[in-house]
Every structure is written in structure tokens, then in C-alpha cells.
Length: 163
Image 1: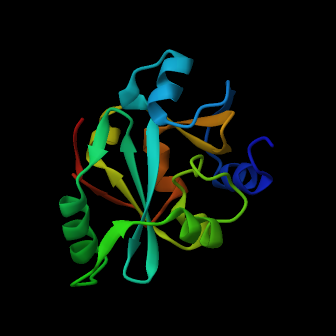
Image 2: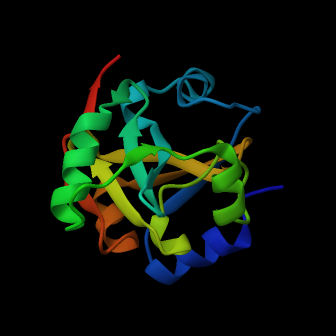
């Protein structure tokens, strides 16, 4: 499997510059940065959270971990959903709701699956970001400034912490 056509069409329709990068099979953002010989801070990892009954996409750099307390506050505030129960989504739930891409290789474009997307502020400091391409052997390099064009309703915030 390569980058799914759904994702290629999405990128083409948005008229953004992108590069598809083929690489050996990797399952973590850290391994991807090592394989591609790039700094972890420009490799994004997509985390899928369950916020009450909906899924939320979160994009943070590979050199950081998610601060669940901070993202919970951000979801409650910006999505105007007080008292959210926020947790990592189960693999079973992700497989059921996020179709057409491999588990562990989900791109950060939550809007493709009608999900809200949150992006950590530290990503804005980088010129470009390498994100999952839907398959363990392919990634997509995009300009960070194009994230807003690709995901119009994305929410930026500080919800990562050092590893």
C-alpha cells in the first residue's frame, strides 16, 4: 500500500506543496526521524484521543510527549465542551472510525474523518513537518504554514511536554 488516493486527492485539492517520502517500515515517529536522518522536532506524530463520544486528532513533534491534562483543558475550552472525559482512543475504536489508513500511520488531517484537529505550538516554529502518510512505508513532507490551509478548523495550543 502506498499513500492512499484519498490523501493524495486531499493534498491536491488544497493546492499545497508536498513531497511523498518512501522509507523502510517504521512504527514510531522516533524511528522515522532516525531512518530519514532528520531532527525529531520536524517529524510529527498523530495521536487519536477519545473526548466523550468523539475522536480528536492531536499533532505533536516526535521529540515531545502529550500532556493529557493540558490537551483536556484545551479541548474543553476551544471545542466548548466542558467536562470532557479525554483519553487515548483504543486501537479497536480507531480501526472502526478511521478507515483507509494503517493504524500507527494516520495522517493529522482529522477533517478527512470529520474530527477536530489540535496542533502543538512547537510545530509552528519549524518551516516544514513530516507527517504520516497512511502507510508505515510512506510519509508526507509539507510546509508548516500549509497546515491551516489543509485543516481550516485546526486549533493551535501548548499541550506537549519534554520526553
